[in-house]
Image (cartoon, rainbow, N blue to C red; front, side, top):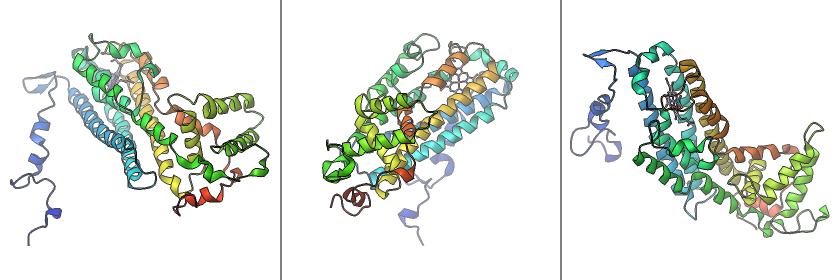
Length: 368
Ligand code: HEM
């Protein structure tokens, strides 16, 4: 019996019989490891092979991460992207995959650390001028996630094209990626258009509260601010935190997030148990986790560099350890989103939502 098309081997291409090596271009792939210390068929520096393979596997996974990120941007870029259906499900699924890939990439540092500093010195001098700093795909990932040039540690490093910097063609790829609408921007816009503060949901809610109704769920936020105030302990800097609460959610917003977007993020985090908020919450959580895994990479890489070259300057010409420490501290992408967590209160003290909104959040028709 012939296999139906759906059951065909995934390694099959065209009319040729399927074959593992051809489908995956294994021969080509295995030709791509060419250590500079290879002389007369012998490896002059045994660990150079490990060094090359580790970097190449990083680049392959970077390619996959970019593939996932671009797909997420496409979905979120649709004006009609739904919040509780297949669109959001796909985005969350892809972001969770990115988190798992980063975990794997961070684990790979352990393998690289089996190389000793002396093993590295056997071939380090031949790398002069080249550095992971120049990984175009790494920079594209940062830009697509939403890391802006002016928010980086030492932004001046990035634009130079002398030794240790980028080739002009690579610099263009990076600058172009920075011009695209980033995932951060798309998420910001999606949050800002959350419809749950439409006055139709809130009419008549908590009228005994004594505050005049000002629309856009303002009565909710007046009440919430009081609850937040009451939740703070004597050891918290109350005035400071309340001042930041007002700034963040009602005046300037924070970073690239508008006040409306951050209110929506806080609301989703507070009422994450409502069925309709499960996917939006998973999306926010995945973004924060990607940022955390990226920071973990920077930190693991920094530790490894300390062990490998101490405080010497990098082959890319930066100050090495010092530069990397600065990047660890500064180059977060979703810091402001994670910052919303500062303003959570205990679940048991959360105000009950208006009946209409509650129903709308339970897939039972919106607003009636
Ligand atoms: C022996 C191993 C390694 C050493 C000693 C090392 C050293 C360094 C140093 C000193 C820098 C700062 C720029 C410079 O002046 O060169 C740097 C940047 C960087 N390296 Fe490595 N590296 C190693 C392995 C790796 C690996 C396996 C990757 C994986 C792709 C990697 C990715 C990066 C990235 C992405 C940066 C830029 C970090 C940022 O700007 O936040 N490095 N590396």
